[in-house]
Length: 115
Image 1 (tube, rainbow, N blue to C red):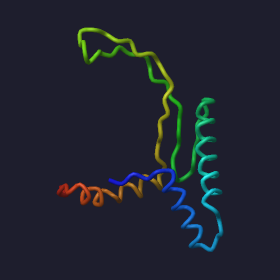
Image 2: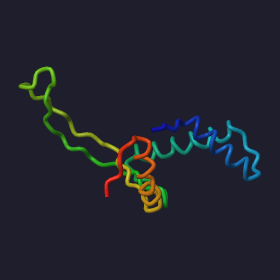
Image 3: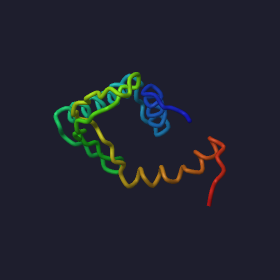
Image 4: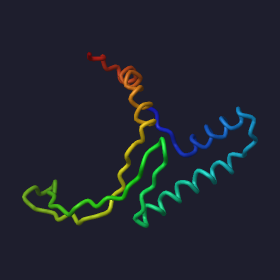
């Protein structure tokens, strides 16, 4: 499976805008993408939820404290403190598009389809 980096995302957006007749520099798109990421991160750090219609919602949730095990010494308990974590809930449009890619994933991984 392919991984898309921030740089590749910027290039893709720049190219799509160019095909639509917009003249925009990669540096400008980079600044916009970085600004969006920073704004989402800052909002989540303040405990706010971020909802992007047709994309999804980022929520800050509390992960409760628990007791873990030390893999090197399984008889020893290790306390894991409570912490804040970010959860992502995809929107309807994203769910529908991603659901349609199951066949592509199976072909990529050479997994036979089961019906």
